[in-house]
Length: 376
Length: 87
Image 1 (cartoon, one colour):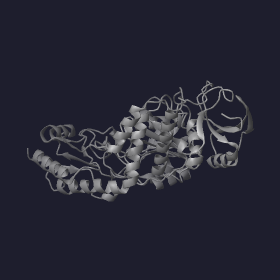
Image 2 (cartoon, one colour):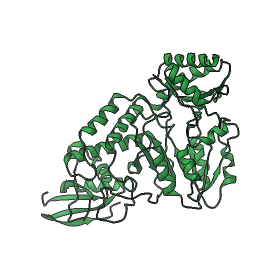
Image 3 (cartoon, rainbow over the protein chains, first blue to last red):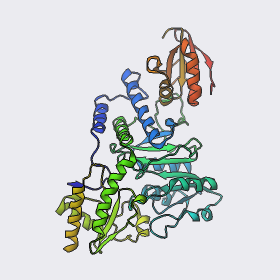
Image 4 (cartoon, chains in turn purple, cyan):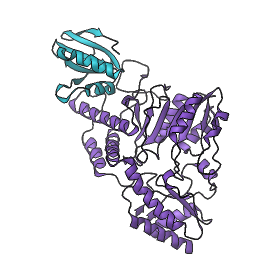
């Protein structure tokens, strides 16, 4: 099977990731509770993963790096921990359902969505018009998981800072691809998963909380700290790291992050971009192919979405899988507003996302397969 | 623990680990569970000799957060606080 769904989960992990997971499974200890030498040894390893993630984001307050089960949980901690009912939140059509479903659930938030008139980039110039006295948070997905389009997170933060609004960045498709620097951002949070371009295991995610942000408790439980007190600790990471940590997952994630830092995110991205360009250049020559990409690869990560005429995207993805052994992602990618913006709210789109070990030959196999489907 | 030893008591393991790593490998203090006499429940401390008291204060100041206090052991299972609010 040719795997081209790395934007959902990277399929091939460096060997060291697997080694770290196995090592932790062979030495199960309860970090933060147990008094044995082994527990402290693995506690140091967990701390070193916080440091590695700090290096990835260029931040030094490692205690503000909270391990979660995935990006969705991190985004829930951020929104529910920071906002209260009747607070006003501004966001974009780029967002994943892990944000949108919170905002449109009965949490009492008031929500404004910035326009994306050209189907490519969000128009942040409208933000000043949308800001209200109760506006608390701007939520921005830095890279669309549908089109791979990047948004200028630094200038977005400046917009928000001038308006006195905190920012929550969804970095799920950005980390491991872009060089991220949050060192100057004192009023922001960032959430991402560990199992995509960071090459970690599933069941890992991160929430980073900058120093000027205080969160309310969103859940309570054992933390291994101040255990004689009935109230939840008010300091990070303990406030949000409730229950036994996913040590195998976190240590695997640490090795994934170190691998990405050694190779450099931009180097890894270049390979994936080149493969997407190869697919783009060939698919655009075919009849009946609709590409949701303008060919400006400097503004996209390694994601390319397309449709074949009016065929349902799920149908095309199934054909690719069953007849050509190519694994892609059809449907709506949990991003319904983005599909409205690009005009695919009924059809969805077929998304390909190469990984760091995907080869040109595999992309040629995809090109041939799509060509055959268009001729059927 | 000897009676000449000191403890830097932290709110959580993450804070203790961070300060511990400010010391070079050969002089790194040991992390231990905080004795119940000092703090009823779970907490973590760095155990260090008197000679490292100055370096420990400097490391805690650099780190800024998470310290509950620095204690000196006076007798077996008895401690006196020598500093609460370094940063």
